[in-house]
Image (cartoon, rainbow, N blue to C red):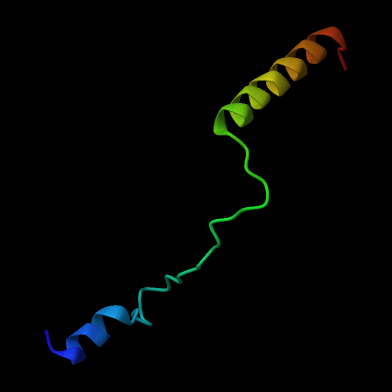
Length: 57
C-alpha cells in the first residue's frame, strides 16, 4: 500500500457528525460486579416497599 493511504486510515475524521472519541483508561479505581449492583438494587427496592407498608404517611 502507498504510505499516503496508510496515513489517511489512521487519522480520525474531524467531521464525524459531532461524535468525539474519548480515550479512557482501562484501570478504573472502583470495580463492582454487575451482579452486586442488581442484587443491591433489588434489596433497596424491597426495603422501600416494606417500609412504605409499615409506615404510612
